[in-house]
Length: 330
Image 1 (cartoon, rainbow, N blue to C red):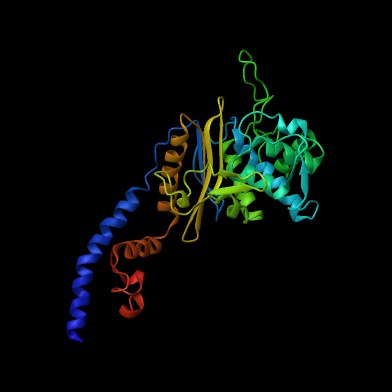
Image 2 (cartoon, rainbow, N blue to C red):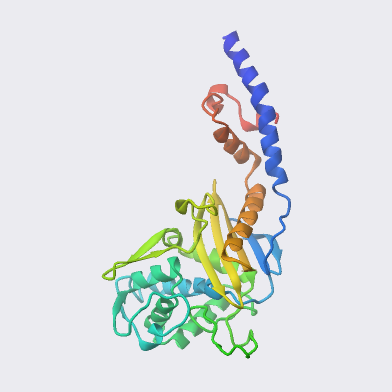
């Protein structure tokens, strides 16, 4: 028995100082990050608290991040039974002719609501967004009225308004100055609030937004997710716990991203608007996530992470040692 306790004391003497260093590094990682973007916001979804905001109240072009509102209106109507996932949608000339990222929908063909919805959530297809808007409201114009009414209903600021279902910028004249009155604009804080409402009201959205691919039946067409932070993609920008939510790009908006990640019950929403490259929007979001989790995860949860990372969790089982985290003098 004495030998056993001597061994345990030796292990603690070795591992606890290391743990203190690791946790100390985590705390230092909690310093406010320098983020290179036109506007950023970091929200703790569990509390609704804004952890960081830079230019978060300034209305900016959101590009396809405005599709978060398109998704919300559609999901609300499906939830109330007004429409069904299996409804077949006939593609109009208007939908087939929309510009930007699309899946080359042809006028007159039929796709289901589910296929079109996955196309906008995973691939950000503009033509699919317009087709769904027409199906759910009769016209895109009528659908936009529903989008703006929903924005007011959920408490978004008057600085945010929508002019179409896709986020496409309406003017194409290079000599025409961009105007917030004629285009969709959102603040980063409103975008975070919208994302939070969407996740809380329809948590299944994360099952769709985390898909690495989606298939369009009958066309043998596979659409890859534009969110490079998904762990399932395994690339240099993947971030553990990420499962959504929406990318965006236009010339005026720059590269944008609304991301969400969950770790040990703590869920964050990060909004990055106007980076210089598609890679940068994910790099800046990583900074926000690192900062946010350093603030929202408790000391106990961070110690759990360290025990798991160190590979000695089994040897230092809390039950076997009859020690709690609170009694460990780290």
